[in-house]
Amino acid sequence: MGDSMLQTIPLLDGLTALDDGRVRQFLLTGPEGAILIDAGFADSGVYEAVQALTPGPVTVLLTHGDRDHAGGLPPFGGCFLHPNDWHLAPAGVTLRPLAEGDRFSCGSFHLEVIEIPGHTFGSVAFWDREKKLLFSGDSVQKEGPIYMFGAHRDLEQYIKSQQKLLAMTAGFETVFPCHHACPISPDYIEKNLRDAIALQAGKLPGQPHPTLPCTWYQGQDTQFYY
Image (cartoon, helix red, strand yellow):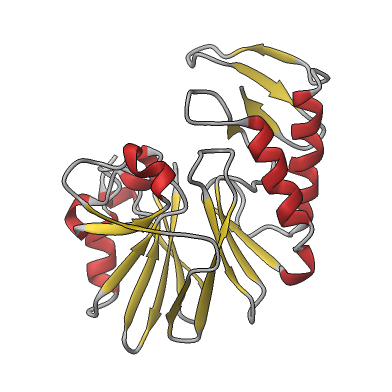
């Protein structure tokens, strides 16, 4: 699947989603340049789409290092990524660290980094405090499935991160996930958390996934691959 399948979807003034049907990226544009949240698969065509949408310099921020978010990095040259996920990034790109409280601005958008490890050890969300927007990566989704299998994931950390976000929900009105429905309401933080706690307690029904090395668990609102 190449760039011909990439859809450009206006969300707000200065905010556009780039969606190839598998994963979603977000482009924030302003008079001085742009911020791209995630870079898609290597074949998503994100670089070409961004070049067509904005002439200015582009700062790339990654919610985490999985290949459907980092695969498209090489044409951009580099990105900001939490160091705990640097080992997941493609070879040859310049990596700069992200940490709790880091801030990035573009036009009317002002993003703040929230560390939310679990889906990966370096997962982060980007919060616009003034606009009450949360770019949640893969950690908050409607229904899922949320991938929680593999050596670079940790269910206990995921639960703690969802509890952290839940305590902040007064600061969120709109959540922009990278998969499935978008945008969604902040109450999915609590729904994902409740189902993750049930998963940890062994209370969710599961069945072997037909193609992936994991079990497919169904919660009340959320599916997990674990």
